[in-house]
Figure 1 (cartoon, rainbow, N blue to C red):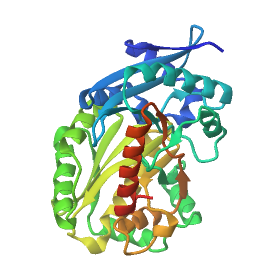
Figure 2: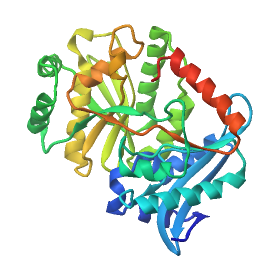
Figure 3: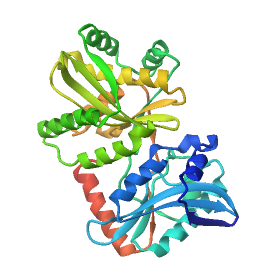
Length: 354
């Protein structure tokens, strides 16, 4: 196999390739052209690449150069190459070609974190190239998922069979009976509702981090294509909770959310998530599952953990845990990489990001 890498500047070619059914199992919104435009605006350098076997396009990747905290730069491709991962020889050849293309571009290392579950044969195919395992995850590495069904009745039955807490149906009935409603929004004013709730949540929980600018930028790029939507739960004219989800490929993902302490006894956020799943069933039959995004590890399922609350909230719906492979780093500058590795290992310990 003779694999080469070239830049792609034709969106029609790029989008047509992503539409191939064989890519769907490992395709995420981070592979979309629109997400690449977000990367372009937020990075020092950006490239959208095609991987070719002879003259046949077999994979695409979006990569960005970002600064390291202790000096220098690194390249990163969120969720790696979009390709058919069932052909492990092609996987090895594609990542080998991509790594060879990136290496002369400068940077301490090249990070990839493909949408592969642990133990997938493609993981071993990548590891034949001897990348290093990253110290901690970049994208969500351990997530909670619900498989969508044909209607609400079957959805609730599936969740019950997969560990839904027995009080959830009561919460749903009570919130609805007491006048809580959920609507979908696609405009900037709807995103502003979420941003205000997120700001109040950060203040209430003394949280740091999070960028309104980043959320506004990605929403401006993805929402017009239908790849992101905001859902808002209200009662008595008050905004109770809101969530931003992505809709792309085979899954919808819960990216950000916040709620107030008002009407807490009604558990309105539970209603919001079920209503979101019902919306997906009705309007996006191509979506197979709802990804609640990150949860803490089993060993950290204790009240003292700073993220236990929202993790248990996600698990309360019933479903299953999915664990992706740890990000891999193709190392070009061993000293700079090791320095960054130890820094991230410290953060993982300090903030309990295992």
